[in-house]
Length: 435
Image 1 (cartoon, one colour):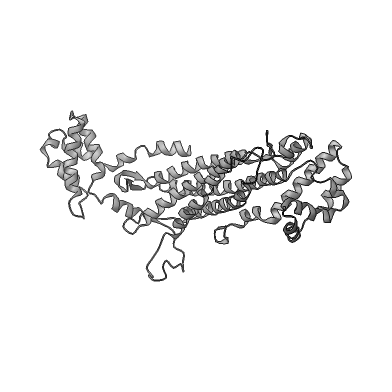
Image 2 (cartoon, rainbow, N blue to C red):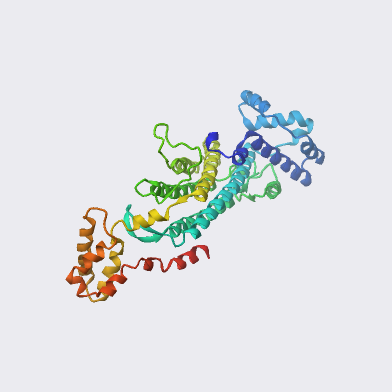
């Protein structure tokens, strides 16, 4: 993670102060539960709650000697609490603290990601409704196909992020589990009710079988969900990048006053934000495979996953959080050019209505194969003619073909070139997406 692509609220979740603060709360809650069960003096739990503090620099100093972060932390807190600190961490292992803390951090990170996703969805919905009936050419393989509307394009992305929102919520639920089960997860030295108490206080679920660590299939599912969301961002960003190309220019990123696009060429307006988003998506997805590989630990536990998660946990969530809000901002400020959409729609002289003519011929008794051949003959003549092509180029060719006019009268043929037909079910799709 680098500050350039980070938002303060998400960064704060992963800062040492935050992490150690969660560790302290876990240890304190566990002591309070033990005190209620009568396994440690209540005065010890009260003392730990009242005096429990830590010093990050001191923890680092102790860790350099003992080579163990949790021991260094407990020693630092003990220096503040005094003799009663001997009752801390009773029957617990480092993983009880580390894994439960990571669950809290990932749950909090999920909450911020959900907010970012909702912001992006709100922007997509607003712009989709704004351009519900703005005609534009649809493209398959990058080539003109049939008309759609710009609103329908955005509605499709909104529907995808509605699914992504569900994925984030499901990932949060799966990751938010607590393990306070002791060595190899048997509860031999600690009462399961301690785990239940800590989980309830932290807003987590109890992990059914922790084997000393929380099973990493949960973490794999979490990072996989983040990877899917990142891919959705890249798909939308790629669409904007294509639409901003000079030859297309149907939409573009907002160009701020005073912004400069190139150090060499003063005229440049580059899609730098969406290009950046495509790169960030790759970074987020790079966490998915390591998370999958973390699932297979040795026996009840090892720590081969630990170094991985210390990197991908902060990096993936921070980058995705930044990307969601940047993508939302791009959509909120997106500059749309309906006149250029209309120009591009007319670029191929009506070729986008070729299917309608073919279908009309089949309705008139022509076989599909012959209908395709008849329309394609005229369509290829238009395609190969030099631009600018007249908007009526295809229909003019068809009207000059007696094999076509013998089957379709002028009124029927002209009706095939009414572009409004392409949009008569837009309302149906919008109702499906937005209700």
